Structures are given as C-alpha cells and as structure tokens.
Image 1 (tube, rainbow, N blue to C red):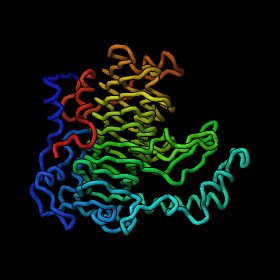
Image 2 (image 1 turned 45 degrees about the vertical axis):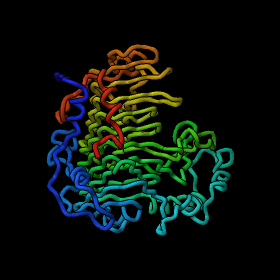
Image 3 (image 1 turned 90 degrees about the vertical axis):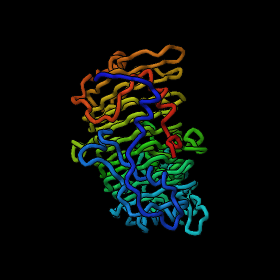
Length: 448
C-alpha cells in the first residue's frame, strides 16, 4: 500500500469529519440537546472505515425520532427501552447523550450500593477465603454452599451493573461523560455506536478462584467495560478505558495471586463480527481486548472480523489484542508500554489472521521488540511498516515476526493470508502515529 502524508494535523482532522444526519425532533424530558450535539450524536460510521463498514455499514440509532439526554442509571435504562432485562431485544432506533457521571451501582433512590448490598446472605469474602484456601481445600475448583452463594451474588451484581444495549443504538457522551462501575453488554444487538465516553472501574465484587487456571491458579472477574457478543456492525470510537482510582496494582493478594477485580476493556466474543474500534485510549489496565473466547473450532470460524486503528495503548499489560480465528486489522495504533507485569501486545491465537501494519511501539526499560508478539496456538501473523522506540534508543523500523522468531520456538509464519481493504482515509507512516494518536485518541477530544 502506498502512503502519502500531506500534513499530520490535516489528515487526522479529516478522519474525524462525518456527514451529519438531517435535523430531528427535540430531546425528551431528560433535557434539551443543543442542535450541534444532536447532529454529532446522529453521525454514522464513515464508508470504508474498517470491518464495521462492510455491507450495510453501521448507522446506530441515527434514524431515531428523538434524542435522549441522560444523567442517571435509571434514565439510561429508560432511554434504552425501559426494562434492563428486555432492553437487549429492543430494536427501536435510539440516540442517547450522556451528561456527567453515571454509576452502575446507583440504586433506584439515587443512593449508591456497595458490594455488601449485592451479596447473597450466605456469602462472605472472609468465609470464602477460609474455605477455599488451597492449603485446606486443595487445588481443585470450589464447590459447595459458599461457592453457590458467590454465584448468586454474581447474579445480583449482574442484574444491577450490567446494562443491556439493544440493536440500532447510539450512545455518545458530552465532555466529561463517564460510565463507572458498569458493563455495557451488546449481545445479539446489531448496529451499535459508542462514542466519547470514559469507561471507569467495571469492578467485580465477587471474583472467582480458579485453581486450575495456570500453574498456580488465578482470580477471575466477570465484568468487561464493554462486551460485544453475537452482534455485528459495532463502532467504538473516541472512548477512554481506565480503572480510575481502583487499579489492579492496588488489589490485595490472596492464595498467592492478585485478587483480580477487573476483566477486559472491550471484549469481542461469541461469534461477534464486523467491529471497528478507532481513536480509543486504554490507560493503565491489565486485560484489554479478547477477540474470540474459546479455542474450540466451531461457530467462530469466519467471524470475529475486527479493525483497530488510531488507538492508544498506554501503560497496559496484555491482550492488545489477543486474537482467535478472526481477520483482525491492527494499523496506526500507538503502543506506549511500560510498567511491571507487561506480558505481550498482540496474541496470535488459534486460526487467527492478524494484519499488523504501521503501528508505533514506545517501549520502557525491560521490554524489547521480541516481547510484542505471543503465540497462543496460532501459526502466522502479517506485520508491515511497524516501528519501535526502545528505552534510550531512537525509533527505528522493526520486523516483529523476525524479532519474535529470533528468540522463540516454534517460529511464526509471516503471511496471515489476507490483505485489508476497508480503511478510511490515508494510512499514516508509523513515525507519525504518536503525534496524531497522542493528540486525538480518547474521550473529550471530539469537537462537541
């Protein structure tokens, strides 16, 4: 592919311009939405902008009769259809503008619930830790009344903090809009747009102890910040994903393993496909993006087609992304990697076909080019035009597969078997990626 670059700022800004839809009816009782905000909220995915533009494209709720302005969890659930239990099937076009902070732990009376409020009466963390200590229980999965009580507690939290999104929906944020302590679940919901939102601390009150996960066991949490399952045509653009003031590094250690209260930022699983994630910023998190949830050959084959472009991966540790099966286009992203615990950037999983082009990797001490790929049972990955700036060194081009193969066995192949065709605008040379992505990725950077 030939790259031309007349000017970083002009090209970058041109990528943000999307034709607005026609004027529509006023907002609902949540409050008036200024007409420029309404026009922005009704924008659709540009033609050719990644896999989500394939076929009919992604229009979200642009055809909605009105625009909903929401400031509370209850208002968000109401705008999504009125009943969180059934909203996932509500296909009426919806445009929702978030103003301020919405907390998934917000009760009906406006107060905030704590983990104790969601716990089953028969569950306590102290009792759980005592009962399933490997020194007492052994390295076998927990069973019995306490584990059953934990599972019921998880069901209580899911009902409270998992917000179900239906088809034909757009959710955008005004400046400062934050969704904290909740999961947006996009399951069997085609045609969804999420823009200009900060996702903060989707914590799990009741993590599961999994003694057979790895050689020493692990704690596993239930909740992603955004989960896309069994859905097509999803555009996730200009959002920020963070754990806020509750980072994984601050969690206690139980049974010799960190007490993991967070899962993924944006997981795309269970046959989902045709997703574009653009200009997002992922900050200080552990697990980011799982594409494909199982190694089992079956329904995921031919699915999980995802485009990642102009995202910033900032001091994050793994799954950037981890790929199974899908044709995943990873281009013009900035990886600024540091911090104790870094594992890998791109995970090459079973039957994966990742195409990794013109990305820029800025590496802190202790991270080298050969650490950026990880073999999760895959065979090949295409890497072209990527640059690395190692700690204390100048930026230079790097062959990621060659760097990996020089220090790992077995070797990965260099041809993922396809070439991306769906890209909007010009592909930037890798040396210019930090300039553009650093300035434009994340929430609160769009002209609202």
